[in-house]
Length: 534
Image (cartoon, rainbow, N blue to C red; front, side, top):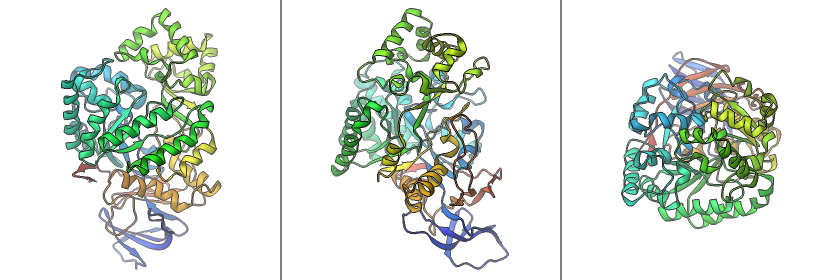
């Protein structure tokens, strides 16, 4: 049945002023915009007083595993997200050679979770994307091929540089996965095994990605003490490979590094003047979230999770870990230093035994266990086989707004879905509309919608997405601009937002009157030539 969205304020994603109009949807496309008469073959959606916007695009998502187990991904769809980009931070589901399934599941668990409910023998991006198609996802999914997975297939999990034969194999794997439909390459240079690499290795893979007009998405080597050196490395990768650059969850961590912000902005602008295509995403909170294992010094991770557990079992090595955390290691992002043990909170564990740790700071964990907080944390990581999530507080509202207003910025969730997650999982996009548009007036409504729709669609070459126009796909979010807001808090994050009234995915209603319909109508979007298409 046709759907007629009647009388809403169309904010089309292009930054043009909103205008009142009707929008007619037929099958999976927007077929007409204007003053449209109602006919009997139409389902009418009364949008008077509401905003009709393109469906939101989450360019940094961690639903990679969860979507195979629970394909609706309600935390995303209920906040108006209709498309998400998987394969982040250089460690994700594919490629995955069979001999590495066991160690890789442990390495991945802290970010994307783990499950015995799926068949892990899919081997390649092609195999993984077929699994995604088979489960019929609730929203559109696309995939970045992760550097760590490529490296693992080419040379294992060792801490060393590749030889020329292995480097050529990495280029070949990158090409194979781009041909399978990956929309770009990701890396996370604080995560193993990506952190073992030097720029040359990444440049060689990015040269392949550039041939396909793909984008290189990077959790850079430092977001703290050495952020300027880190950004220069990323810009060098863009310059020497010709690839488009996209910084993940852009920020500057730690009070002592806030004086670097002007130079951070300068580097962005200099790269763009040089002709390097630069974009970044951001979640609208002063706290981040990742796997708790990142607080351990880099040497602890050499050889993968099994080696981490061996070292955590060694009392003398624990002393060295504490010393390195307390004194720092040059070039290492030390989360304890820039957040503090009292500002890092456990968000998820995998066993029942340690459920009482969820929601506690590392200081409180020590108090609960009657131990030094370091020892309590090391015990937790050991008992949970490193599958522990965390939230860390690092910044200020002023800095969130500064980066939000930058022309390179688009919105994201970066949401880890397990346990007691960061509230961004449920509320990042409505928070921008409610807090930063309506309350703080940091952005206009049109600017915010652009940064949530057309901007990311353009950055990632998503054809006919991110815009309300005739001929575009009918991915649409209809919300109340007077009430839209996130509801989740750091202590009670699992709350759907208010004000998201309707969400349409490829022409079908996934959310109606603020309630999920149970309909799953997403598609797996793949790169074909230089476009990302259904």
